[in-house]
Length: 344
Image 1 (cartoon, rainbow, N blue to C red):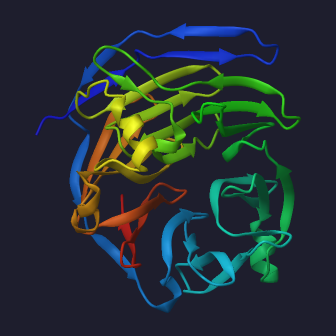
Image 2 (image 1 turned 135 degrees about the horizontal axis):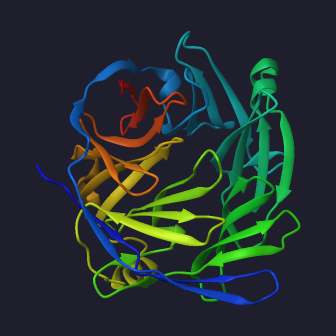
């Protein structure tokens, strides 16, 4: 079946430099149609079940054999699981004390001088901790390498070299992306939402499900929950591209519905991950009330917006992640089972 890819570059984005001068970018529009290089059904090669995975709701790859799970557990937020020997270590205390979060999410994984650092942002707590993962596993307790206090209006934050990319509220309760240095000096800002006559390009982190920085720090991807699109941002170059598998209309009423009701009925992208070469986006295209009974597909896009693969699944997943070598994909199902799929 032929797949149609629409790449919408019709948005106007305003980038504010640190001295207050604004640069306005009007980007043209183009459409690309192509058949994906690969379209097939992925069959799970391994399954992990048991008490260790109870409460798991998202998964992140740390190495080719180590996963980190977000867990609903009384004392900790994360669990590191070794797929080779089935061992695990819990870390990041749950609570309101020093070096604890009530809830948190992983914004990135970096390797510096052979040390793996996991960047964790506390939800609504405006703090980012960089966890020394090697020492945490060795000592069996959370070892924090660095703490960053974030801007008061900040949601998630991603470390990109010496800068920080943050999702930030403004006075109108609209969220924008801001790139600033560790002295809180803004380098650039991407406002939302903007669109053309036929296509919608949404820079709205609140409505995004897959938000990942390319490992080299050059690009940022945002797959949208309530819009049928994946946005790709050139962080330093101030460019943007919106990719969709179908033509979609500029319907900003979806944003208003979300702000009024907290959700809309139709959902598209629910989770995903990125590698050096590609964006892996978990695609449902269903009513939110039917999500647990719907079998999703995975859309694989290159960073220049081309559709590389479509993977059909036999399981309904809530979160996926790709191994560092790009050979395996893991997913967490709604009933807390971990599945491994071989990509090569």
